[in-house]
Image (cartoon, rainbow over all chains, first blue to last red; front, side):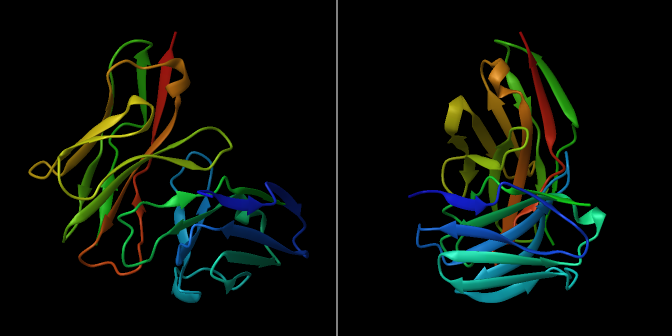
Length: 115
Length: 116
């Protein structure tokens, strides 16, 4: 299995809702990442998990809450989002944060719309 | 600090003609360099990478890139473009000397339009 699987593919949520995005990989990668991407813009790093521990938080608002329950799974919990949070959320993984020379595998993303 | 510049917002090319997408980078240490392609409403697909070794890197779908340390460039090339190559292309860099967390820095992206 050489894929990063993200679910759901599309999500519409109200500003008072609580929802979660899920990312799963079975490549034995120990570094996992959340990126946010606006249309026609480059991905922006949100969080880095290394060996299931949060290593980097790029000053992301607390309405985004990441979680790494095990080495294969990464969640992004969403609460009280704003319309400007509407974007494509991408998950990525690599063998380990200190390496990266093996490349990064990206999921297909979750298209989030906040109404 | 690391940064990537893609000087062209859009590249237009006729099918069958050579395609070049430009990328220059700035790192304080040694770079890992990557090219990704993104089709509408899709994630990023890996094309190729430079880690070390041969400056000419061959990747997926007939793409190649040349690492030029003196010019700090990593331009993406394809000898004969296809209409299906129309997509958004991102160059990315990681400074392996200063970064311990695998933080990729992406360029702004270049939209490639291949006309029949």
